Length: 142
Image (tube, rainbow, N blue to C red):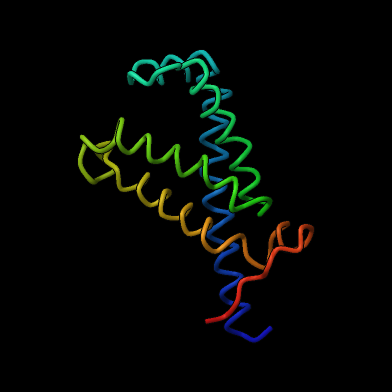
């Protein structure tokens, strides 16, 4: 592996782990601070249908998919529910508040959405369980 490939793989590792931590910790907040009832109540207050089902799915997706993203396990699959999570948050809650996150705007969820789409397209990279355990193709230079 040449220097470029190594830097590229390390960069992807850093980004994947940090994005995974963001989702994992947000999911833990929903689980341990708001609880299922609080998360379901918030989802319902946004007018999202079937809030008990979708609120529970949201909470579990952020915890489980966030952890899988940190590990780089089934990366292309686990980023799908995370990207959907961000799209729903973008259109249902953040978009009317403008761009800036300081006003509950969409800049942060848009960035997370873009990161998840990138992971769907690129995969987890060399330093991941996908590469080590599942034999997924490694990130190629160029």
